Length: 394
Image 1: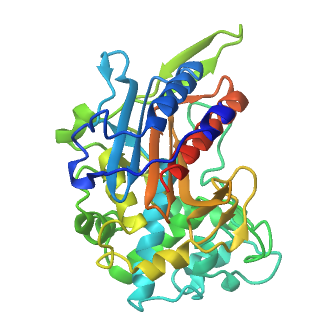
Image 2: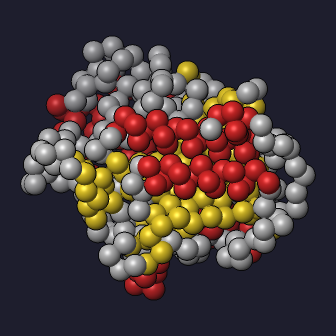
């Protein structure tokens, strides 16, 4: 597949506006590379036992092509379509980060502010390298504060274990029994709790619950209308995708298990709670690329600042380096900005090539736990194929 994708030709195309993402582009509008990519996309989904998935390609703020695979709900025979709502997991962190930078630009905070200025509870965390007062907002945004990856430490599979903590006081109660893993600000290590702390700062400064702040200051100005956090609104319930895990029993037999359409991310919504159809994420990506007016949400210079690498990332990261929440990935001398998501059975990614204002967005409703290593490799190959296709739009 690598040789096949590498040979794709470059094309100059006219895009469909984001406002019209509900219309399927005609075959003439899609690049020639698209059909090759779709075959690889469907091949990966079939091999990995994915129940349903969707992907779209963008350029200059418009949707060039859109493809759906399989079922949003297999038992009901409901196929994935352009309205299907997926869960986007850690891509939510890009919302949280932009919200923080809004407040920075409005001079409500500084990136070098001590986090304990807003969240004194964090002084209970053990810091063998110094004082917890040394941890800054910039460190939280760049995954360099030294906090653990997972939010909830219970991962042994017992039926009583919660999916995620649901209340702030539960996290606070765990703080005296945690410690930072390295000197804050010295290196990268992915952390979900850091973005919960950022959301608490947003709430402290504005008086708005995190979800309300995002609705009012990010989604409404950008015309994002079918996105939500937590339980699905009744008028969107029929559009919500179920999610699935592929598991293996003691005899080695694989089966696909439905997890149910809704689940409660609890206190972790700021690091992984966004639910949306691809058309809403396309509006977000159009804003990130600068293809739509952005100053009402965030200045272009501030987005560029967020994309400057601060730390090298590890092999499990969505990029080679991390800036302020966004990851930077280089392929063949081309720079991409993006993020991935993975929560419950859902998996997703988006990557932007800023020079051409081109992007790819994809979501899957299935995670293959039975063949975790092979599944991860296949997921990364599809990302690489998607990046090659995006690079061809330059």
